[in-house]
Each structure stands twice: as C-alpha cells, then as structure tokens.
Length: 519
Image 1 (cartoon, rainbow, N blue to C red):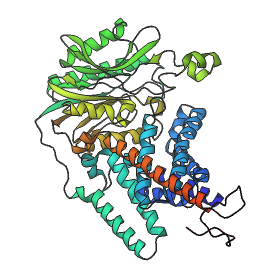
Image 2 (image 1 turned 180 degrees about the vertical axis):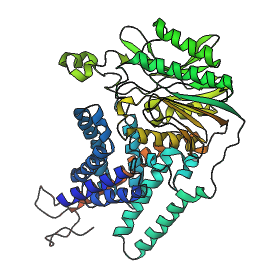
Image 3 (image 1 turned 135 degrees about the vertical axis):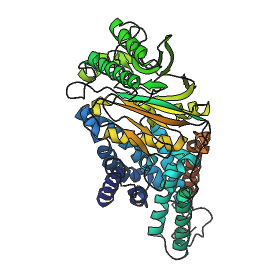
Image 4 (image 1 turned 180 degrees about the horizontal axis):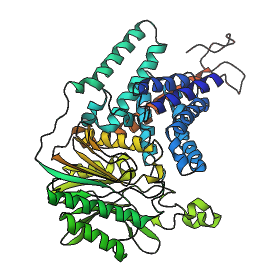
C-alpha cells in the first residue's frame, strides 16, 4: 500500500504538470492511467488510500498559488479537494470488477469532476481534465462534445492505457484497438475543425488600468484603481479623436474597476460618467454594488454615455470564504481574522440572457465564472454573439493562477466558437479568437488598452447544446456500474460462506466435502 500511495502521489503531481505553467498536456492520459492502476485489485475499504495520495499530489501542486491568500487557505482547500479523489479511489476499486471497467471508471472520473464543480456551496471546478487541453490535439473536440465530453475522452484514454498495461493475449489486442479508436475520435476534429459563420463584427476595447503598489491588493488604493481606468479610457478617447486609434463600439472595464458602489459614491460615479462621455460609447463597468446592509453584488454594468447605467450581469459564482461566508452566524463567533475581512456576503446572480451592448448580444463572465459551464452555456444558447470576461485576480498577480485562468478563457473561445474579450485590472487582459489564438494581450502589472475588431456569430456548437447532459449520463453510468459491481460481489461472498448455524458446508454442497464448491 505504501508503494501504491507513493506512485499515486507521483501521478497526481504529473497531472498538475499538465496544466499551466508547465502545460505538458501529454501527461493527462498517463496520469489518469497511473491513478487507475494504483487502485486496481483493492477494495472499497482500501481504494481511498492511493486515491487520497493522488489527490494530494495533484491539488497541492495545482493550487500552490492559493498561498497568496494564506498557507492555511491553501492547505485547507487542497486537502478538501483531495478527498474527492479518495472517494474516486474507492469507487474505482469497485468498478474494476466489472467487464468494460475502463468505461465505468472514465464515467466515474467525470462524475467526480462534476460533483466537486457544483458541491459544496459554489463548488471548485479547478483541475478538470479538459482545462489543460488548450494548444493540444484534443482542443478541437471542444465545440463538438464540450468541456465535459473532452474530460470523458481523456479519462477513457487513461483507463484504456491502464487496461493495456494489465491485459494479456486477446485482451491486449482489444485494448490496443479500443485505445486507437478513442484516440482517433478525440483528435479527428483536428481534420474537421469547427468553424462558425459570422453575422457581422464589432470593435471592442479592453482596458487594463493597473493596480497601485505591489499590485496584489485591489483595496489598498481602490480609488486610484478606478482613476486609472478613467484615465486610460480618456486617453483612448484622445487617440480616437486624433485618428491614432480606431473608435470602439464599446469598452470593457474589469471586475473591481470600482470597488465601491458607483450609485452611492459620487466621486466614482463622476469618474465613470466622465470616461463614458469622453469615449462616447457604452462602457461595461465592473462594480461592487450595495445590496442592503449585509450583502453586496459583483456586477458588470452597461454604462451608456447618454442614459447612464443600464443592463447588468451579476456574478453567478461568488467564491466561498472569499466573497461570502456560509453559516456566518456560527462562524462569526469564532473570531477568525481572515473571515472577518469579508464584511458582507456577496449574492449570486441568476441571469441567463446575454447583455445588449451597442447592438451586440454579449455573454459576460466575472472572474471565476469562466470556470463554470452554466452561465456561459445559457447565454450562448440565448443568442450571445460574443464573450467578455471581467476579472481582477490582483490577489494572485504574482502566481501561476493568472495563466491557469487565461487558459480556461481560451478554452471557452474554442468551445463556444466565439471571440472573447478579457479585461483584467492588472493582468492578464487579452483578445482571443474562436480557435484559441491570443490575438492581443497586455503584460501583467501594466496599464494598457487593447482595441480589436472581432467577429460575431449566433451558431451554437453541439458541445454547448449538450450542456450538463454529458455529466448526468456519466453519473447514471457510475451508479449503474457500482450497483452491478457491488451486488454480484456480495452474492459470491454469501455462496462461499459456510452455514454458521450447523458449521456445515453451504446449502446445496455435498456433506462429504470439507470446503465449499467453487462457483
């Protein structure tokens, strides 16, 4: 068991290296295969041990950036997320007893990813297999099967590799055949790449205003952060007036470009108004808005130069313990310093329709929203022609979290077949093409304005239409596999146990035999 656990931990670290900043995507199926092999031959009571070791190796390395919040936050979150892989280890041990076990285990892997994406509270999607496929041959499958479908394909490749490692004779031939078939299916879209028809174009400006000081504290001088975005937008207006820059149809400011309510703070309101009047087009402002004495909203507000504030998108997935505190009435009494910094709880948004900005239907995401499928799929399904991402990430500006989230954003461009405009307070802003190419980007910890003309599309890829159904199908398969795996095992055990009442062989066995008949 010690050797299994060490090998599992090494495989977990290998999986973390498949993500940014190393981005060794070829390790994805190999790491999954290692996980599967280390749980093979165990029972549900012991399978969790190498599963936990794998989760520790994976999540502690993948989310090392969480140390910028605090070592305690990193240890707590990574430990909790590692427990999901412990559960998967026990489940995998049971599913190994079934025929076609590579398929059952692949479905279980996706079920686990879907489970931890949604539970508990707002979930934690970081580390889904598909989030590491940008710039790999697997990325072209995203529009056809979605991010969950790509995770399933990668998990199945890993399980088939494990089957190949333990198979003999005819089974090895079958394993090779299945591995080649799945490999071809997951990469064949490279030949038949997805291409959506455009219905027009629009010119967009993304403003990265920068954060004063060390750059990792958005609240250190939040008024200066807002002023930086005002100044950058007014400078853009001057360049447009001089002919040095194309006039955008609208401007995108990042999350936390205003950290106080622009409706109640007169200085903030005046700054936004001045910027919108100068540029003469709508600005999608990232603002923290009051929602009563105990709550706030994290919103993208369409600020028109004539009519002022209008349509809004509210962040769908606030960060637990970072933007809201569950069970606050119980935890407040513990006087935990870090939790006391979250003075008011952030409410979750429910919007499913895209924003209308300068005649364009825009699917907005705020920061970690980009890691979740629901809001993006719903807005695209309802007519979004373009994606925007408003993000701060200043807390993590000196870590690899920035690149991991930017890779997810590129994935969303490929998956939806749409251009994506990213505005960040101090990194990493960018304009991304539907094939995942970064057309324009700004260096971290700089003030910059990115202006680009992007295409618009209303086509809805099959992967978006599938939505959550792939995850639900994997959940059903996992439950079925567990039922088929557990009950026959118990039946065999009962047939092999002697009748305890008589000390005799099992019923139906000849009395002259001292051992149970083999079943």
